[in-house]
Image (tube, rainbow over all chains, first blue to last red; front, side):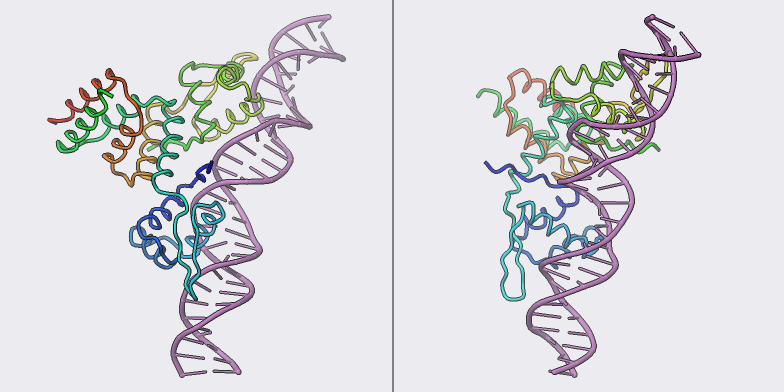
Length: 126
Length: 126
DNA sequence: GTTTAGAAATTACAACTGTAAACGAAGTGG
DNA sequence: CCACTTCGTTTACAGTTGTAATTTCTAAAC
């Protein structure tokens, strides 16, 4: 129905802020981004907000002088779409190699290992 | 040292063929791609081969009339780079949520579950 | 040698991206 | 009221990507 708009690398940064703080003003988004990386320029962020609106990823409500941005696509569906695309592109669509790769190439705490083992157990008999 | 060149979506398709069949001729690549998706056009593939050469992802050896293409970056390091980038972009760099997402949103055979559980066990005491 | 078929190289072109500067409208402080 | 600040809107511009068509080479066949 609604083919989740493709969100680019930098656009993801913006979306993450909007998802977590919606509704937000442009300046709040800018502030949020600069917090992690001061090299962000306001104009750049404004451009990205606009593009995301054009793509249908964001909407906004005008309230007096203020504009409140909010997501039109959920983080969940965006994550799903991006993940699916990545899985396809890099691992040819095979989940197992993807999981093996990530598990093997990173360190996990015992707690994480346990949690994941539990998740897998849940999958086991289905 | 060598910052793995960024490989685009369609370029990945080409690289996969080269990785698996190196050294390959352009026509073999084209053939391989068409096998899975007949809508590929030869010129498109040639363009991609050229771009990949320019990016330093591929090299070739000229042997008479034939050009033999081969990868200059390994599949492994490319997968690693793409995975790292994806992990960062979509999951903010947190492995656990990524794994949880993929495990939860896909089906796994009992065999796969067992294998992954084994992998996790290996990680457990490190 | 001259033609020719098959491959590589060059050119094309619009959409998307990263990165901003410049412009314009609308309050804000005087 | 008027300059100034603050947002959002428009314009810019080069690099990347998807998708090819066109042109140029060149080894091979005459």
